[in-house]
Length: 341
Ligand SMILES: NC(=O)c1ccc[n+]([C@@H]2O[C@H](COP(=O)([O-])OP(=O)(O)OC[C@H]3O[C@@H](n4cnc5c(N)ncnc54)[C@H](OP(=O)(O)O)[C@@H]3O)[C@@H](O)[C@H]2O)c1
Image (cartoon, rainbow, N blue to C red):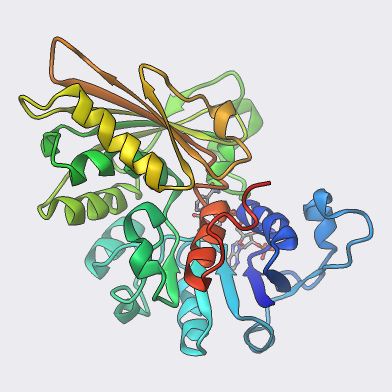
């Protein structure tokens, strides 16, 4: 049995990890840590564990976690994860970081978008971006997985197949995403209070959201040239889920069938991608509490306009589900172990 610990276990994503790992057939839970001196029962965070479950959260202690873990999941805020990720990596642990601290390859971009110095910048090149649909072969070989952001996961799965097949104009990509409020984490902020969110709907960080460079990095690698996108996130008054509506222009003479086939091929190859076909579109309800990304497409017969709509659960395919999917790939477990059934 592989032993997995969660650092930042009281987080939204930590709770989802505890739930998945507790039922995973090939792993056991080691440490569940918090900054607090008063650890509590994990069952109070995750009632699904049952009333007799004795797992507890405990104050973070690096040596204890290192001694008791094969895999360390970090569900800390960005700039906090990088303080411990490298030390666990140096001790030979498989580190799966759900924060954004190791997603960007260029330290210059990290410092620009996150406004913080990166103390382990040499590790940025070693980290593998944990989007299995793009980087599965590299994920199999690394001990540092930078789990993708929630918005980038939904956006990239709707664009990457088209970029890889060279069927769209690279300067035409517009991503309009709407996220449930759990995407903002547990910390209190004025913009995510109930009275601000309920019965409301608004864009935020228009054209300046920190997930933009991550999306551009993956698409630029796939296209082998610099790709820039327009990305506008919105806050939806729901708990969980991200719906992304993506607008692109197909290249002249590219037929509808080629676009459809690009997604069909992806869905045929990928255990957690479902393609609904032409003119059928996903809703949040289809993917909430699952690790799936559902995709639909519309191809305008009278113009080059193509619209792709994707839906994911931000806490699962956008975070903890994908993190376990990455662990399964790295450890050679069935890719869906703990994630379906
Ligand atoms: N929410 C999502 O949909 C989502 C999706 C993808 C990725 N992510 C990323 O995954 C990470 C966790 O996200 P989340 O939304 O689950 O977080 P969260 O609910 O806001 O919780 C973060 C946890 O980290 C601990 N923490 C907070 N400040 C800290 C500090 N200064 N130093 C050390 N520990 C601190 C807290 O635990 P204690 O107070 O108990 O110590 C807290 O429970 C973030 O980096 C986030 O960007 C989130």
